[in-house]
Image (cartoon, rainbow, N blue to C red; front, side):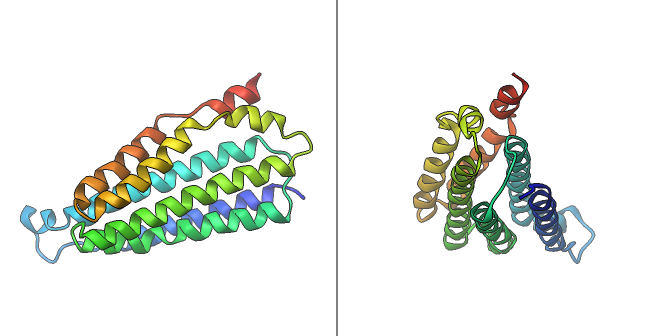
Length: 191
């Protein structure tokens, strides 16, 4: 089965997710900087979520460059990832509109954690779908960055119960860690 349709569908869903998020950015009713400042939590939530989704899109793109074929299991694993990503706009809006209250931040973290687990599962299913999964296994390596990210997300969920803003900053740090390009797959493919 060709991977082109999977890539096109995923790109479309991710574009819609970002569109939904930006539609949640409602301008203030006033025209002063104070009116705009009141939207700081909403805007900060949007920026973090946009960056997180961009990281997933970028890594998804690189991941699919390293594979030749997909099968039904890959399609369903990809759908699971897209499902969790599609919940990010809801959690983003709830977290921002409630100025990083504890439970919305916890929910945001749970969604990020399940998205990370779904991505991890997609990688494993893709490896098994390849006739020679060795190149993808080599490119992924031990995935220390992925494991550190997942652990940090879980810690941030626990932290969110007592210090939600600190948890938000942990989620931001994880996202920033992934914005720095991870060239494992490109290095492997270029060899």
